[in-house]
Structure formats: structure tokens, C-alpha cells
Amino acid sequence: MNLIGDHTDYQEGWCVPMAIDREVVVTWTARPDAIVRATSDGQPGVVELDANDPPDPRTVEPRWGSYVAAVARLLQDRGVTPRGLDASVHSTVPVGAGLSSSAALEVAVACALLDAADAELAPLDVALLAQAAEHAATGVPCGIMDQLASVSGRAGHALLIDCRSLTTTPVLIPTGVAVLVVHSGVDRALVDSEYAARREACEAAARRLGVLALRDAVPADVRDDPFARHVVSENARALAFADALRSGDLRTAGGLMSASHASLRDDFRVSTPELDTLVDLLERGGAHGARLTGAGFGGCVVALVADARVHALAAETAVDYGAATGRTATPFVVRAADGARSEV
Image (cartoon, rainbow, N blue to C red; front, side):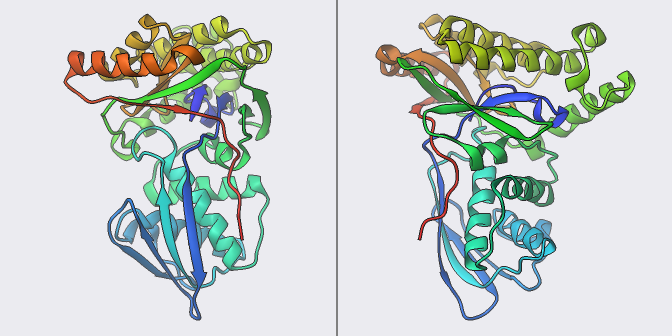
């Protein structure tokens, strides 16, 4: 779940996500053959594929199986032949909420297949493989943030990610503050959104400026380009936000989140009326700051709220949002958790 720094990762910038206490768990037992068979308690159908010859992920049914096939195929490309297994997928990560459910699935499947093959990859390599699996399964040209946060999370901390060097720096979340997520009731699907178009626009802006990525641009370079202007200003906000968390300055951190939402709404144009309503309600109810989280186009907002106020604000926001939109908001408090791991 991203606290700040959206649409910066694919321009080699900075972001501040955190792994949360929602998870995808893959349990498995070995098979005597090369068949990978998987079921999910949250998705329909049975995925079945030959680990020796994984199919094109885009052809796999049910559609959630495209992630399984993509991971298996990419592992084989890297010299790891997955062994056959029967797998069961259990998830508490909402799908289509902007909370990186696909990244969590990709990373969990990769860990299971690596364990079954008695093979190992470094955490960064698992994240890069999972990112490539997203590209192969959906065609969405996502950045690295979701997958890297999933493997690198640390309990009690956010992560400052440098998406050029692919380094992560844990940032302690101050005491006395809670992270509140509220689902808008509008599911997000990046395949059907303008995500790819936004990325293309940013890449075009970088080429026009003659820089490797918009990370290298300065505000004067992008004054007249709203999409690029968002990326440049968001990078600055992400760095300042990490500093504010370190110093326990929640007023500044909250203000940066609110400014981030305004930029995503007005410059990058990925917000929705429902997300804007939630942000407004949370801020008027006393949150330090709030913003949409994830790529936008629906899903969730995130807010920093005083511990003593968080449950009351969650309840009030759900009621007021329903009255304003006719939709059902689903609020829940999340905590920063450790990243992916294998257990025997």
C-alpha cells in the first residue's frame, strides 16, 4: 500500500509504500509429475498447466491463472524448472482496490514454485521476476514499486524506494498515528484504465527533455506539462514525506499527502469523484492528510490519523460517504508488516 509517490516508479523516481498486514498465502504439496494445479478461495476455477512447457499467460483460463503461468514461464526462462505441485491460494488482500493484490499473488506464487524446485532467488530478483510476470500476464507496463515493497517490507516501517538504484530504506512510522485505508466501492482495473497512456506520456516528456527519466527533470522543465509536472513534484513530495516521518512531523507529512492527491487529481487526472469525496471527508474529520493510493481510477484512499481518533473517523466517513454517493465505503486500519517469506 503506497503512502506517497504514485506514478513515479516507472520514471526511476522515489516512492514510500509499506507492506501491510493483509496477505496472499500459497500452501502447496508436491506432485509426482510436472503439473502445476492451483485453486483459490477468492477466485473461480482451477488453474492447471505443465511446468515443463508453461503456456502463454494471456491464453490461460481462469484469468487469475495468467499470473501463475507467467511466473512459471519466467522462472523457466531463468533456468529454474518448477516442479509439479498442488497449490491453494488464500488472500485477504482486496482485489481491484489499489492495494497491490496482483503483486502479492505474483510474489507468493514465485516463492512457492521456488521452494518446490529447491531453488532460491535474491529478494530483488523475485521482485523483478514478479514485475515481469505482471507485464506478461496483463500487458500493463507497471513499475517496480508494488513487487519490491512486497518482498522488502519491514514491520513498523514504511520503505523509501529509490526506483533507479532499486534500493529500499526503512522509515519508522511514528507512534501515535494509525494508517487508515478506505475502499471507495469502485473497483479498479488497470487493464481497462488509462495507465499505459499515462506512462507513454511521461516517457514522451522525458525524451522531449533529453533526460533518461523524469527523475532527472526540474520543475522549470515541466511547467507546461501537467503529467510530467506531477511526476517531478511527486518525487519531491516523496523525499520530503520520508523526512517528515523520520522527524515525527505528522502535520507536514499529512500536508504532503493532501498535496499529492491534488496533483493526482488535477495534473495527472487519475482520481474519481468518489475518491475525491473520501479524501475531503477524511480531512474534514481530522486526518493529518489523505490521498488516493495506487494508480488511481478507483480503489482506495489512505489517511494518517491519530490513534485515538481512527475508529471514530472510519465510522463517520463510511456513513457520510454513503449519504453523499450512495456507495458503500469499507474502512480498515492497516499496519506495516514484514514482506514475503517462506515457511516450512
